[in-house]
Image (cartoon, rainbow, N blue to C red; front, side, top):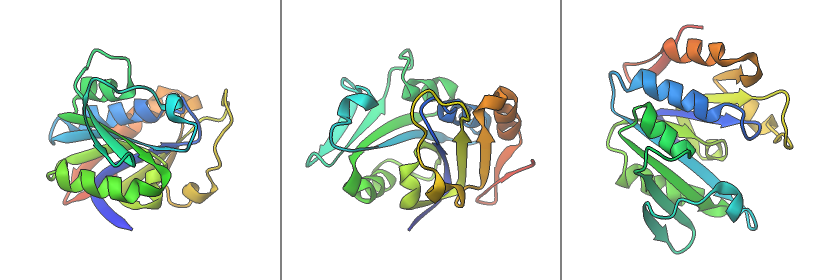
Length: 188
């Protein structure tokens, strides 16, 4: 397990569960006093390539076809990564990785791109490899697509929030989040 105490990781049980909304809220809060990197990591299974969007045109590195790292530079886009830039992240990266190469991809990212900044990461699958400073799960009770099995992740969560309850819970959580003495702390 890779320990990354300066990372907030946000996973969810479905698409549109509030992961990006939470990430942007946290970036807005933390970027006032810290340099923040936004990160989105997608583990791609064969046949899912088109499902995860197109990031062509941005700076990218491709490593043997196992993973690709894109830097988002267009804050005018409607992509989740652009929203993180708009929220105040200094840099935002998107890692698209084949399932079996996630550890290789995140280690490359940490050694090549992260230089002590706080990292706000949108990924659920990465939690199997990384122990972040804070792991949040965003749940949507009424999902339009099939909800993902969260049984492996719920026990690892530091906090579970329900997007169906509105934006007040997200705002309350991020307003009360701090990074002090190399730890994330929040008042419930």
